[in-house]
Length: 118
Image 1 (tube, rainbow, N blue to C red):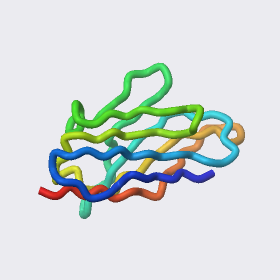
Image 2 (cartoon, one colour; image 1 turned 45 degrees about the horizontal axis):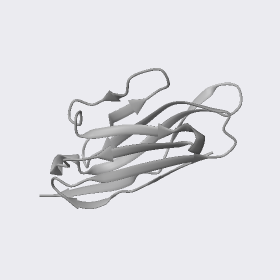
Image 3 (tube, rainbow, N blue to C red; image 1 turned 180 degrees about the horizontal axis):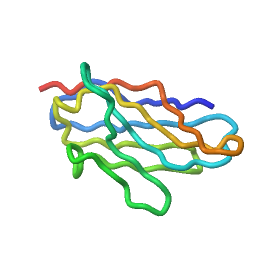
């Protein structure tokens, strides 16, 4: 199983980016999907998460600026980021709970760097 994240880059403050993360492999089912980020010198933090039958969850710092969505048929989770600020600069990691055999396990993508210039 592999999670491949993409879409990061350099953007000016106030700009937008869309991150994508696709899971590949022998996946029976997908549970919670999420995006985390880690800025230099900081701990990894939850940005947003989405799960079937529940409202998406957002960190207070990104609420009303970011939107998480998913396409289960494509094993893909997205993060639409708008109104970007320099403090959003970080490596963004996707995270999924995947059913491969008998239990859901947690998988991480490799990270994609988002840099917001002032």
